[in-house]
Length: 498
Ligand code: RVP
Image 1 (cartoon, protein in one colour):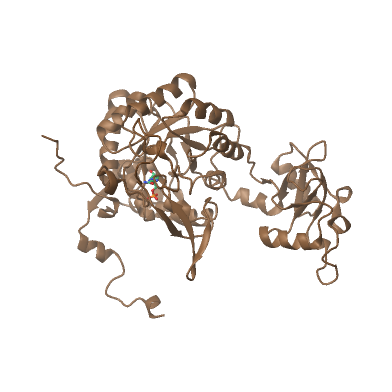
Image 2 (spheres, protein in one colour):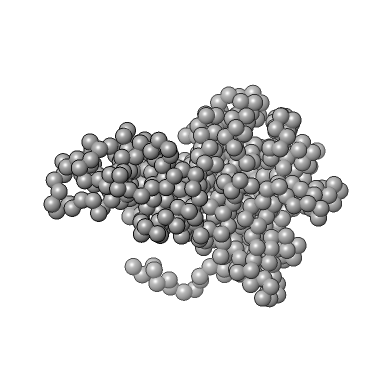
């Protein structure tokens, strides 16, 4: 007879945390959110890769491209660039993140000398910037001939067909920095010369970057920035169990810091083979596996060499795997069981394998619940899809803005490799939907609020770090009636009056 679990499987909203004693030691501003990203001998060594905040962005077309990866790494977390795209374009996204230098901005508003004031005004409106590079070929990397800012023209006097070459500030009058200078050297030049912006050029006068005065300050505001040992931003990439022999070398060549096999069901011999390939061909490359929802799945991937294991089937906001295939498990129960298996594995081997709770994080406090249940970090899709930096389109619906968000198992993504169990080469049925999420603005602004909530909850739980929370948190199940009690109730909300 089939094995039947006695316990029902539960999800995050069925739990709450009970406060422990809060002291000065764990006041919110003292809470440390750093967490291991890869396995290590706990007690004997430090993990080779760590996150500064326990948050990763999902391996999805509508979530993790280079722009989002840069924004998230600057805040301390990591993105896994989506693998459901050609090898070259994924590698190019990784390369862009690795090349990114804080404060050094590749110019996105560029014109030629024969463009007109009308072109300047249109470009300014479209891009929202008032500094325009004038290069020989109108690209961001052409020979710099001058720059145009709003100080160079008067809309009330100058004709719209006036040529850029006639009113730009020419190169001969510009103060520039040479390629290779540091951000603080660039900043010194900016201050000494009272500039707003410093173009950085090479020995052939080709433009590489702009350094803006405001960006240097912004850099100082990112104390959590997630950097590799060469001070470049860190980035991950998703791979599949089909084309890894082609994809992995290209990603390694692009400078990727960590890989993750992306699959809705990771308890498979194909994951083992992929892990073995990476470990035997790229000894130092780190790689996570998943997704699993139980002890057996975790132990299988642990033995196969996974550096971290991702947990969750069917909990994603856009995911209909449970309805379509009838496989899955409540996210809380899955994390609790896998964390237990991980701890047993650690007792036995001395090796601590981080686990990532993937999908189904709806409220910020769900992140703390996942950590308290034993996760080392969480992966989120819907959360990040709402921000300016995600790759999807922002559209107006009724009176508000929304962004598109679609699952990797939807027809739109056509990521059959993620749902592949060995034989098919296309999607036979959908496991995800195409949807909208409310537009929420900038990643950094939203993440700051989320992180302060996480720290505040951890402080209430008497925990100054994630390992302490995992050790000491106390969780309680809630009844459906007490969930109602948890929201505003028995009052007439003012916003409903209008
Ligand atoms: P959420 O954060 O709840 O939006 O969930 C994101 C997660 O959902 C992803 O990290 C992935 O594990 C899963 N996913 C992505 N696409 C699909 C699908 O089409 N079913 N599911």
